[in-house]
Length: 126
Image (cartoon, rainbow, N blue to C red; front, side):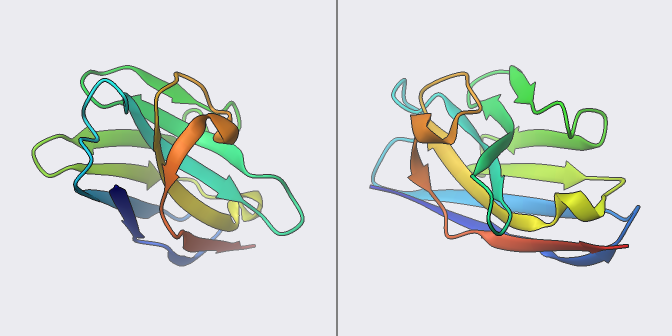
């Protein structure tokens, strides 16, 4: 089983920055061919969970939602088993619970990701 633990959420004013981190642990080999991607998803109250950014665990392939391109940057540290999300120029509409996830597919569809963290809240005030 794979455990994912997020950290780094909080409250910030519009235009500010936050950095989220996700630490992977457990008996599962998250860097095996069965878990090729890790990334971040978010869910605002009353809305469906949406993909924000994912990265390949073994290379530099990334995928971003259009709404965050140019503002958010996903990165990974293979040695530390962590994936981070640097969020700049935050907007009130970025307010949501942010979840770390791991899965097989190069896709931002949350239903395709198998392992999930508990989430960390990000609140952006205007």
